[in-house]
Amino acid sequence: MTLDVEQASEESTDTLLERITRQLPHLRRSEQRVAAIVLDNPVGAAQFTMAGLAEAAEVSEPTVMRFCSSVGCEGFQDFKIQLAQTLALGLPVTHSTITSSDSSGDVAEKIFDHTISSLDRARRTLAPAAVERAIEAILDASDILFVGFGASGIIAQDAQQKFPLFGVPCQAPEDFHQQFIAATMSGPRSVTVAISNTGHTEQTLTVARAARKAGGTVISLTGRVSPLSEIADIPLIVRTFEDTDVYTPSTSRLAGLVVIDILATGVALRRSPAHSEAIRRMKSELAAMASRRGRRHRGRLVTGVVLVTSRSFGSGEYDPGAVLAEAGYRVVRAGSSHDLEELAPLLAEADGWIAGTGPVTAPHLDLAPKLRGIARYGVGVDNVDLAAAAARGIPVTNTPGANSAAVAEHTLALLLTALRGIPAADRRVRAGDWSGKPARELSALTVGVVGLGRIGRLVTERLRAFGATVLGADPWVDARDPLFEAVERADTETLSTRCDVVTLHAPGGQKVIDERWLAAADRPVLLVNTARADLVDEEAVARAARRGRVAAYAADTLAIESTGDAASPLLADDLADRVIVTAHLGAQTREGVDGMGRMAVNDMVALLRGQTPAHPVPA
Image (tube, rainbow, N blue to C red):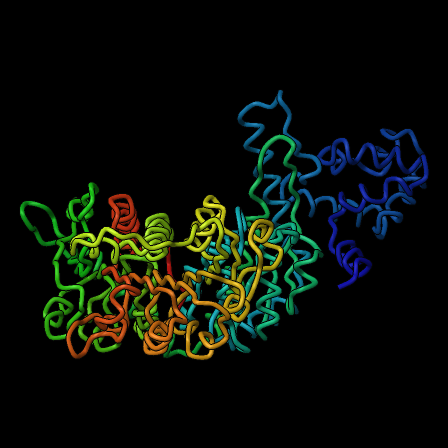
């Protein structure tokens, strides 16, 4: 849409008073006197005869007729009809400015008039053809992503509550990085609804561009033609009046909510009768659930059962179990391995599940007919079958950032321990050998950080404090990110030839350190892994360590958490001086455990109460 088309469209839907205001500079001086009378008191002007209006403006009756024609009316009677139609919606926004002398009653009346006339403008300017295209796109969507920040974020959250009722997976993450990841991972039938009244919000523009690049359809909801509407496949332009000089109005937000209602209603009307019946049954079951009397446990009214399978749950100062009990939920504990046989009877009764690091699979979920939510006690969700959970309508949350500082500090602890050979030195002393071996200083080394999320960034800060040269590798982080002012941007292949130390902080499901990467390394490298075991080919690392190509390997996790014949090759006796392993200690600080407990419990209570959790995980 060009600016000329936008202006023409807007002019064709203006009210009479809007047209008079716009035309005022172009009217003859005598016609301007008539316009001044009308604009100063439109309610009074509606009562005038043509002779009365001419007398009040001190002009002739033919001048009044010319004025009517100049503002698009077919004579004086048409002028009065259009003026009455305009006033029927309340005093227009241009005549309802709030002043310091207004009483509370005046303020209320003017805000109502302002809102009514603004919504009417939105109704008149919204293009029906664009609405139709948007409904068709949503009907064909495989999934929908709603994006907005600030007041626009409220619209996105409202939409996310409505559209799942139509059988379409929806999400409206508040975090920009989660929005960007969801947009980047979208497919050809994915729909992204990008909401920004100004259409200039940089983060919303970035997400919209990512969705377009991924091949999905972008619907924009803006207040004017803007960069966002130009990006969109289907621009919905909702023009309102807003004056922020005195107060912060909500008309654009209200208009956006109305448009979401229009889209939701349009989609609902085109769904099959079977879908409507499914919605009716769902609402009936929800009503029955709400009216069901709770059970009592130890004197408290119990409204549900929460299964907890995290080892560190409640091991800090914060008591998450007490919070759940106070909220009316009975806590049942089980092992962190998530053994199906052990969990079967517990999952059968569970309304919620606070899950540890063990796998959460489709067979687990098949045993949990009452389950209404899973709160992952930690940030990683690679052990959770998100597709299986989404297929069963079970939302999943996690605890991003709660243990980031703890893991970053443990990373440095492992790195320094391996760098200085502390475990081997301790064993030598206990055997009576007090000789020392030379080591390297961290400030003299180049360190590569793979994965620049919350933990990776905290690790880079701490490495720089030691004076190390830091390279960062993460394809999801924009090259313009301020982080790269202090950290050199690189790819994982470059790290193999440039770095003395490489530390891993990426999501699982990929191999970063393998035979090929190790062969490319031009020096013995020290590897640290506090992320996921599957990032590393442990067989290849063990072979490289024996050849002296890996100086040391320090990890908080292994692919096989066992000893004896089934143990990881990295636990071989001949590698004891070069391999350091801890058992998931990264997050185990009092502060980290308390943070995870608060976030997991708050999200679980929100899920069980039918509210939106603070930390949802996209399906």
